[in-house]
Image (cartoon, rainbow over all chains, first blue to last red; front, top):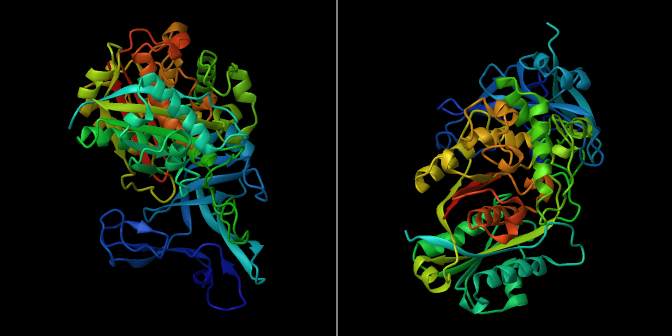
Length: 146
Length: 386
């Protein structure tokens, strides 16, 4: 868990290492010289071209478009359902797995075409507290407001 | 490479066997296969055992402890849902390469009531991303793969539901299937939603099961077959995920199978039109629809029209290009390690007109294919001919 801790010892923690909370919440990936982008910063080499050590950090846009989705009605104990899980395409050419919020799941199931390509923006929320009492912050996407 | 034939097969009815152990289930299938082949364990020179959830526990050796320890090499195979079919391929390769003349493959799994697979359940709940940053659960992953087809080609939820209706109807003729009940389109559409667009009847149940095969070289076949019709392994293909743009988020169930399918047809010297029946990996109804196209049973984007026009349905029911006449995983259940060998058994039974497929025999079948994908990833396709 140590690598997920950021900045201070007492502040909120991002749920995944590619979510950065400062200066404002955003996703940060790594980009290979061949153009492939990844989220996991610990990756040892590029699975597209095979090169190691050619990565540079890339700040990802907080806006994207919904590619596909599903509505999860049954999950592990403790996971609140239903929720809309989606894959969001970002303008940098990477797709991100996330939840959609502020989207009516029943409506999405009825009219999936209205969800495809929907412009969305990144939002964060505190999802839990870890064992040491830090807030754990997750990201999701909501329909774009501007 | 030498020609390889399936001399014998054995399968236990898929179901729930809480009172049995994994080696007992596997051993039961092996004994059936040995009897069918007309050989004993003393004739077997090599053994590949497919099992996933006890893969650290020498399941193959423990099966031999049940049925006869002859000192032969044992390979324990784990390859997600393609575990059993990968074990079959190991046995196939050992003969094709000229190392052995009689090899045995078994797939066995005891799932109990284990349900939702995948995801990041368990561990520190504060750091579990499941349901907080999307989902890696199999119903969601295969739900999204189906929704992608809806997005690209206008496919409707009814198309996926029709597949479930079709496969459940097929299962009524298969005594090896865990469930043998028919469901109506209304039943499927109105059933509890698990992961959109897959309702309960569009998701495979788990269960326990085992299936085994005895493989032989051409020389051994001449000695042992006794004039009985045997299936030839015309292609044995294994692929892993190629790199795709959506690697990180949407496991590629399409390219994986498309590549394996192309290689399988080339190796066998056959095309989709020559394939009399297909047993494919219908872990979810959405997956089956995608694989109609991936296996070339219809053109790209045409899978919805394919099912609408009787594609995938048994010829006795007025269909064509039958898929999962066994009832598929949707009815049989999906004991992960056993699934791949069971699919091969089903195809073998049809093309050799084995009594075990009597009630559901696809008429005049000379070639069939068995397909499995495992996410993580692996895809196997076996084409069998007579």
